[in-house]
Image (cartoon, rainbow, N blue to C red; front, side, top):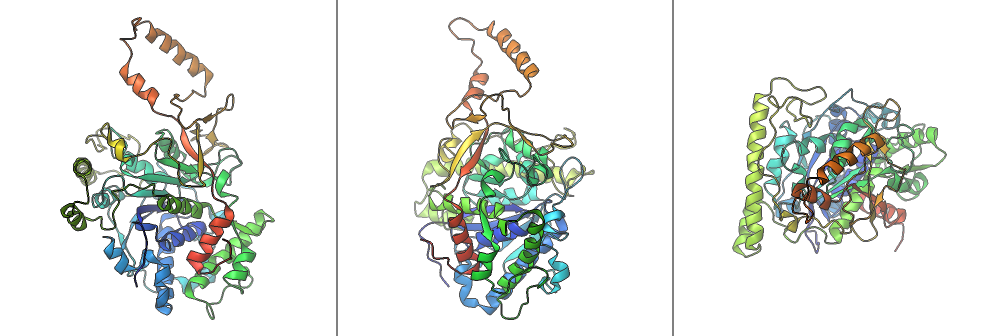
Length: 526
C-alpha cells in the first residue's frame, strides 16, 4: 500500500511513560503521515519502568491484531507500514529503556490516576490484552543498549538538526542526554524539542502547585529549563487542560457500548483497536468522576504530538530533511546533487563531534562500577556525581554559525500556535512546592520573544550582591568601553527564559484529528 504525501515526514523520538494519554499520543503519532517515529524511549513516571514496556507491547500487539483483521487499514497507519518506512530509510521502531527514577530521591508514580499498571488496571479486567509472549513484533524491537549510546548512534544516520524530540513524561532522559557534552548541550543536535509539563499560571494536577511531570523529576526539569534552549517549547497544563475528548462523543462515534468498569468492554463485535482503547478509557472515566463532574478526558500528551504535526505541515523543519535520509540514501542524494557543499561540510563536522562523544560514552559505560541512585544500569546520569568517575562527552561544542541550520528565536511554532517567553525556576526540594514553576511575580515575568535580558534573581539579597559585583567590575572598564567583557556581551545576547505555548488552533481541531486518525471516524467539522 502506498502512502502519498507531499512532504518528507519529520523523524522523531518520543520519550514517554505510558500512561493512558501517552498511549493515545503514541497512536496519533503512528497514524500521522507527517511524522516518522524512529524510537520510543521509556521512562519512569505515570507507572514503573517495567510497566511502561508492558503497556507499549500491549499497544503494538493490539495494533498488529487490528491490522491482521483489517489489512486495508494500513493506509491509516503510515508509521506501521514497513514498506513505507523502508522507503524512508527507517526500519522497525527502536524501543529503549530509560531510568527507573529521578537522579535524586525516590520515584513517584501517578497510580492515583493511571492505575497500578498505568492503563487503568486493564491487566486485571482485561487479561486478553496481554500478549501471550512478551516478544517484539513486526513493528518494533526492544534494545537493552544504553539510551545514551543508542540514540547518538541513531542520529548519525540523519542530517544534523533534523530529528525532533517529544518529551511526554518527566524530563529525566532529556537531562541525561544533555549531560553528554561538557561544552555545549547535546540537545542542540535536535531540530525541535517539545515537552509536556509544568503549571505556569494555573494550579497543578498532582499537588496544588505542581504538574506531575515536573513533580516526578524536578531536578531534570530545572536542568533543562535553565538552558533557555531556542528550540525548546514547554506545553504546560495551562494550555493542555482545555483540550479534551468527551466520553459521550467517544461513545457516539467510536464505541456505542462504551460505559465504565461496571460494564467492561467486550471484544466481540469490536475491532481490536477499539476494544483496547475502550478497555483502558472505561477505568479512566471512572477515575475522573471521582475528581470532577466533567465527563471528559484531558488530552495533555496528544496535544504535544499535534504540535509537531502542525510544525511539520508548516514546513518549519529544514530543507535538508529528506525522504531517504540514511547513509546509503544520503550517498544517492549526494550523487544527484541533492545537498549543497556547505550542508555536507556541516554534516561531516557534526558527525565527527557525535562520533567523538559516542566513543567517550562507550568508554565511560565500560568502566562504570557503581551506578548512582535512581539511574538505570547502563544509563548516564545528568549530575556531576564525581568528575573522575563520570567523564562526559568532551568533544567540540556546537560551533558559532551552526545556527544557520538551527533556529531563529522569533520564529513561530506553527500557524495558530503562539508562545511567550517566561522566566521561572523549578522548585526541587520543597515538601509542599516540589515541581512548582516559581515565577517572580514582583514584576512581569513575560519576556518579549526578541528580549536579550538576563534572568532576574528571585532572591533580592542575591540581586543586591550581583549588583555590587557588577558595579565593581565596571570600575575596570575604560571610558571608551574597550574593557568590555566579551563573554558577558555574548551572554547578554542570548535570550533567557523558556518558550511556553499559550495558544493552539483549538480543541475541536485536536478532537477531529484524534477521531479521524486513530479511530477512522469524522465529526463533520470543516
